[in-house]
Length: 435
Image (cartoon, rainbow, N blue to C red; front, side, top):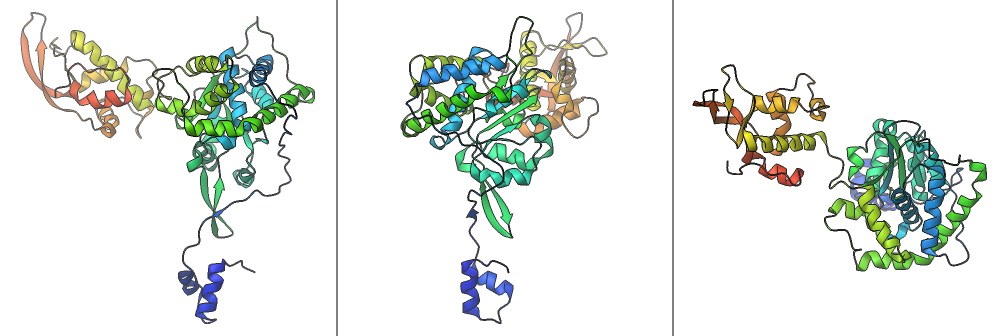
């Protein structure tokens, strides 16, 4: 028998037995989304039993970092970052942001899978879902598992629903997916810790909500202990100690997030500050030298001033560099009459394309629907979203005899890029912002 909402039952009683289904639903009004509750499953999501005695924070963090470096070729800063992230996973209720831990490497056999196996023994309710069906993972989310996703590049490319889980679950306020269950809307919570391992660079979609840990293949001078799950008792003990420390400090961590912002290194962008806030709050709560080492790790692990740049942002950066050259010496490319442009504040579309073509491994060459030669029209299409379009400008040409000529041609003025450079290319300066 179909389960009716209580408002539908009341509407049926009011309208009588002769009312049809549409009349009943209209009288009942919209059904509020239901929050999905934890459900019993046949999958054992293990919650570690908190350590019974008080746990020393700095000692625990040092032991976690040492255990990680025993099995993975990572530096001290990366190990400290992961240790703090593990404690954030145990103390998740205290935080409004859960940064995704993204483990990357330039090539295979760098230890990503091994590191995830180690982390699975140090996280609360670990759930490996690299090969899981999306619906199965969604059913388990109300139980707040810690997601571990190996080979995440293929995972993110094929399964849009689970990619939504990772992105929406970054912030508690937006960590919900609206789905239909038995014909009724329900909200699935997505605010869960997640660690991903993938080959290559961090995806742009995760650049602003993740902390990247870069692995390299161990060299001949490095010795790592092979990881054996059957010999992981020492990790189980650390997992319990992490749960105990998080439980003892949960209220203090929650208060610290609400009452004050942790001190950050000068120039830290907002997106990075949000991702590191849970880790720095934990470091400050641990005390001793951990707060100082955590801030040093922030600069060492993620030194870039912005999240992973898109190809369009790299295109703007390339154009900014070209304008710096033009500012100093004008465009070097000569036309059929051996005349070159001497203006320092503008450039022809054809010359700009020629300069951009000199850049190795041009990421912008892959943009757009048409993958033909990179030409002025494709450049114009790429710049259009930034409000930049070529126009007819007057250029000054000079031949080998130093004679000057005026010519009209399509091109760009440096001033057209001033706003885009200021927003997307930190530190760039166009030659002249007067259009």
